[in-house]
Structures are given as C-alpha cells and as structure tokens.
Length: 176
Image (cartoon, rainbow, N blue to C red; front, side, top):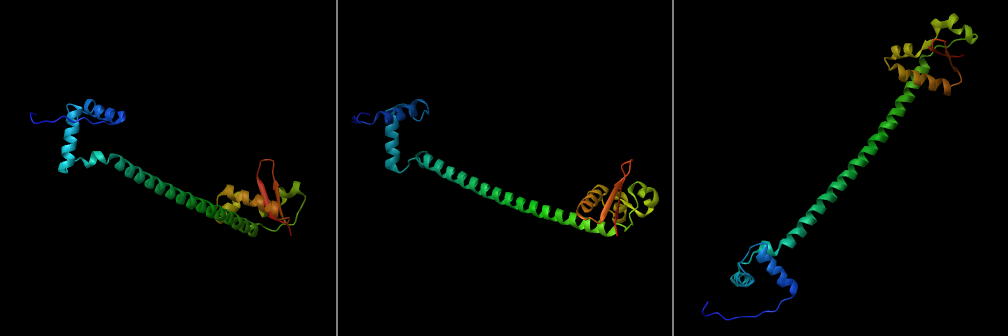
C-alpha cells in the first residue's frame, strides 16, 4: 500500500458499532478498514450483495406473505364454520320433521278403544292396545324413539290415552 492515502470518515456511533460487530461477530473482514474498502469496491464495481442489503425488505415481503396466508386461512375457517352452522340447522329441522312424521305415523297406528276403567284396562283389552315395542316392530323403528313419539302424542292429543302397568309397560290407544 505504498501509493495509499489515508482517508478519515466520520459516521454516527451506531454505524461504527454495526461495522465493528460485522467484523467481530460475522467475520466478514479482518478489520473495519478492510470492510469499508471491500464494500466501497463492490459498490463501485456493481458487485454489492443485494441479498444482504435487502434482507429487511425480504423479511417484510415474507411477513406480508404470512399475513396473507393467515388471512386466507381465517377466511376459510369462517366459511367452514358458517357451513357447519347451516348443516346443523338443516339437521335440526330435519330431525324435528322426522319426529313430527313419526308422531303422525304412531297416531294413525293406535287402535281406537272404548275406555273401561284403567285398572281393568290391561286385563280386559290388552290384545287391543299397543306398546312402544309393538309399534316399533310394525314400522321397523327404534323402540326408544317410538316410545318418545307416543309420549309426545299422548301429551299433545287429548284423544290419545296411555296406561303404565306395575311392571313398567306402557300401553297406548285412541279414545273414540
């Protein structure tokens, strides 16, 4: 460096600390002077490191990409939740409709029986009365669902009567 000239530059302290850390921590040069010479030469020759100089820009772009992806996921999740709400509503309406239909079916199947005193009812007319199990067998239905439908029908239709025996068997019929 016989033909060298000394150049003193003044930079903010934070810049000097950044350059010094680059030399010590990142080992990009042997000294701050070498770092400056190398950086200036690369810039003048058009060989600067665009990756290093645009890292913050790249991070910003990546952050924007991540945010867009998160927004897309959130939107998709909201769409799925809305579809689930609609399916649940349709299922509820369908279930209510099926329950009403079952009640109509069991109401039609109940025999019409003149009412003797209830204590004598089962003994005298058991063959004319229906249990939930018998109705379920006739319509190939679930006995528990049929029992619930029969109970609902007996509660909502005054002409439908029921009697439960001491063994827990419930009998149903329609009164004329």
